[in-house]
Amino acid sequence: MTATTAAISTELEHASGPAAPQPGISAPTHGLDVLDVPADDRLWVVGVHGGAGETTLAVALSGSGTDRRWPRADTPPRVLLVARTHLSGLRAAQRAAQQWAADAAPAVELVGLALIPDAPGKLPRELRDFARLVAGGVPRTWFLPWEEQLRLAEPKLPGQLPVVDAADAPRSLRRLAADLTALPARTASPAQPGPLVPFTTLQEGPS
Image 1 (tube, rainbow, N blue to C red):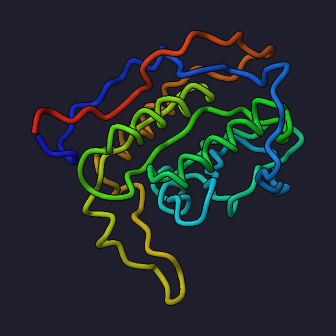
Image 2 (cartoon, helix red, strand yellow; image 1 turned 120 degrees about the vertical axis):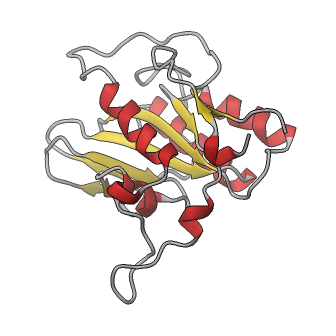
């Protein structure tokens, strides 16, 4: 089975890691900057490094990007972090998760992290193990498959980044949008952290 026809796990009740910032966590030396945004219910997609896929996911999920900054508003914005699965991308995701866990980011409702493959094929074991470690620092993690369709996207206007509209998004991104919609509404008090369990993933079949 190919990545683009992958079967998708929907066990959303299984969180990867803590649902709220934790005491005793040190903030990273270099964290993401802050962007003041309107207080509304939209999803804010935060790329944790350049080329993470922030614009692609923001358009496909009918959300907004922040140009790699934490959104800040009068009410905690809903945030999805996004990173590539190469080593530098995973390290950037780890730093962002650490910044949030240390309560060194603005107050946000962090729904989780989306990991986008940096190349087709399976991740090397070292990177997959590191991805699981990073997943333990955020409420949920979605491991998206390689989508060849995204390489063929074109910009809507000259000078813009190539994007795929929500209606034309590949199945994996449409399912991610559905997963996010299915998440429970934010609660008045932060949830307690749960144990580390395998993160929500788009599973490939045997090669």
